[in-house]
Image (cartoon, rainbow, N blue to C red; front, side, top):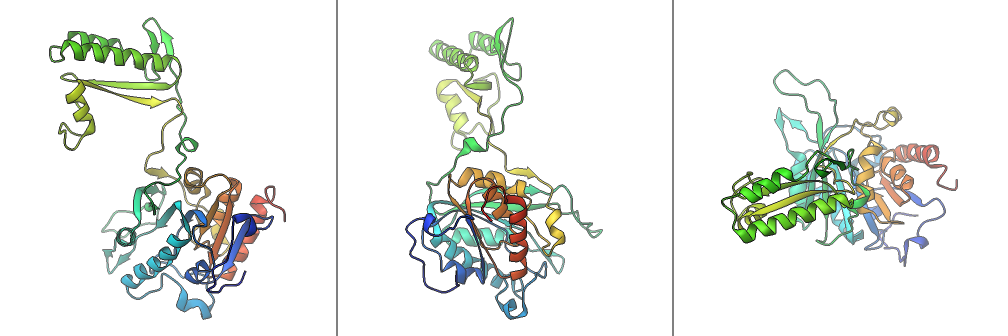
Length: 363
């Protein structure tokens, strides 16, 4: 497909993709994005060049278009906003953007580049849903006057408050399940409810009505444990356990519930629990040696794609590099589009896709 300013008229993604289910497009991200139709992409996952961090494999005639080489960090933020402004047009209202970006020291001053970009995007109308800390579990040796840096940010943005998110696909399955003992059903961590029942019955703070309601709620929770809806629970009873986070009703919904009902119950779903916002994943090594020095590990991409790209959906990476996001998308049964200014990176991406996804595609 040629890079031009005319937006393609595509009624559905089947008209855009051939049997390989992916496209690798060469050129400036903003200009190439202008060739895509509006409301076309389901999920964007990308890591743009970091400001003043690396020299990428770009032909000299394209060097003026390269993001990351700006003399002023403000120009870097502005140029990234231009890309994400066009991404907002091509992204479906239900779509998500996952942005990985690293920080930079300049004249010994930590620039806070990830947050400069993130706040600029919020000011431009994006909604920030998560800031994931990617703990890379290893890092370069630091100067002797500061700590080693071993993490980066992954921001999850949406353009609409109602967006596609399939949390059941990313749940972490519980390692332990409920069991039976002399007290009846026992949760995965050994909670039987006997202690809670005694605390409710002996409470001098709860009213009789509150006691009855609390005992009924406890019995209902134990029944959910027995039939396999939940695997664990904790009960907080007024005057017995401390509330979570705060006792202030204005800032804590749990505190308000405790004040109004005299108790609250927190449960762990049998389907598993949602991952936290700290991901411990070692960076990719294998494909670094080819030409690229900042390769996405595929493990980093699985949860974002599974959670926010529907079946048969389209993943876009406007700074695709050596193609990690395309490989991950194809392996998960999605379609994918990658854009890059470097022809050499795109050639490496083609080889990588052929090597790692040949069983899923027709080559």
